[in-house]
Each structure stands twice: as C-alpha cells, then as structure tokens.
Image (cartoon, rainbow, N blue to C red):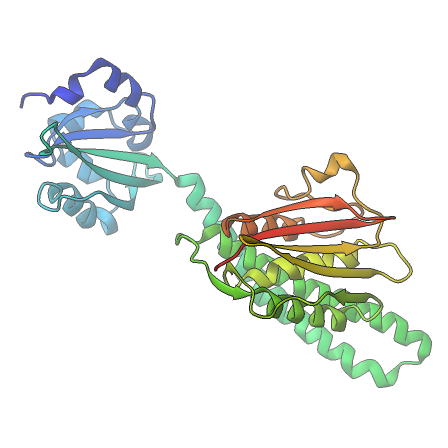
Length: 348
C-alpha cells in the first residue's frame, strides 16, 4: 500500500514519535496502518513493525472484553465519518494490563474530502489506578467508618443521662469529635465524586442566598459556641454552580471556626452583587494566615495552621469554584483573622 503524503512528512513523524502512542491509517483501507509512532511499543509492548505487517497482532493485544468494540471503531472509521473517543485495555505479553484513551480523528484534504483517520492512544493506566484507589477509599470511609461513627454517636447520646456535670463536658467532646469524623467522610465523598467523574460538570442557576442561609444555620447547630452573622442578600440572585455548592461554603464556614483560637469564634458572611458576578466574603476573628501560606493553602493535601484534618476540604473548595468558572482567595481581616473570598459568575 502506498504511504499517505501526510505520514511521509518528516516534521509530522518527528512530532508524533515523541508522543505516547500514535497510529495513522488510510481512511479508504481501515485497519491497515501505514505509519505507527515509536511510542506505540512503550504501551503495547510489541514493535510497530509487527502491527504494520499484520493488524491482527494489534487486536490480539486488546483485552477480550474490549476487543470487539475497539475493532469496530477502527474498521468502521471510513463509514462513520466523525471523531471518536473511547477507553480500552491492552494486555501485554507479560500479562500486565495498560489502560489507553483512544481518539480517532478524521483528517480531510484541501478539497474537504476524507483522506485519513489518525488514531491517537494515550496511556492512562496511572489515572485509572488512582480512580480505583479513590473509589475504594470512598467505600471504606462512607460505609465502614461512617457506620461505626453513627453507632458511637448513638451510644454517646444514650449516655447523656448517666453522667454528671464533669462527665458531660468529656461526653460533649466525644460527640463533637465524632461529628467531625462524619463531616470528613462527607468531604471525602465529595472529593472522590469530583476527581473521578468522567462527565464534564454541568452548571445551572443556583440561588446563592438559599445556600448561604442553609449552611450558616447548620453551622450554628454544629458550633453553638460560635457566633455567626449573615448580611441580607437579594433572594432572587442566582449563580452558575451545581448541588455541590453547599459543600464549598460548608468547608469554609467550618474552617473559620475550627481554626479559630478566639474565646468566642465569630464568623461574618456577606455577599456583594455586580452585573456579572457574586462575591461572598466569609470573615473570622481567628489567628489569620501568614502571607507565605496564602498562595498554597488551596493546594492538594495542604493543611491549615494547627490543623488535624486531611487537607481535602480547601482543595475541594478550590476545585469546585474553579469548575464553576469562579475564583477563591484569602485576605486579611481587621483587626485580626482571615477572610475567604469566593467570586462566582451570575447566571443572568
């Protein structure tokens, strides 16, 4: 078979030989490869020449559960003239399994006619392994730990009438710690849901006033020793977000109390509305955050000063706000404390 002009271009081949794995075949003869990049062997474990000589060498490496689907995508590429993206598994000769993200891209000539189909495969094995580990962590945390904590909190509630005043204080601390563990399981759930989701986030109009009032009310119940104030916000103002917006403000409000060393933690919530954005400010009277930590506090695994937490909460906040098309940052409060600022796009 005559090699295609595109695959003969030196600069084209040099470019794709640096990638993880690229296969290019003529659209008029699907499944017959006239060029395969050097990176192919790193994923499949077989030299490109074997596949060019016999395409069945490629199909034999595909996981049995994926083989028919992958073969169909390749062989039907000239009939179904559209770009296709799909995942698949490669079983190497040593028995190891590699996950690939495969993209089939239709290439057209100067007249607009289909000339070739470029198949681009990227090794995503590490990503898949992380997703599986996170899903396992989620199951353990959400089922085992959460269930055990629910039982423990139930026992603590039953003990209330059996302890004296001195014991009540210790019982309250046990209950508070238990509720904090339950809260962390919710953060883990939200974090895993955000990280492993294959779907692009779908935003919708959400009434910011309702979310803030709900979360402040819940935090007042969780932290009776703290004082919360919330400035009036127009009830009809909506931002672009989704159902996980509550988790953003839950984490920021919790943070404002849990990292607060004042005798009476105080948290003030305000909201400013402009034509294009809504800016929420959550100010506390705690110790504040040093300037050197302000830029990294939202980093994955980063912990606040004196924190005993996992670092997931603020990373989740940053991830969600960014996905909504917004921004979040930290400022100093006066005379002391921290202000977390969340800016979100309006929906109208």
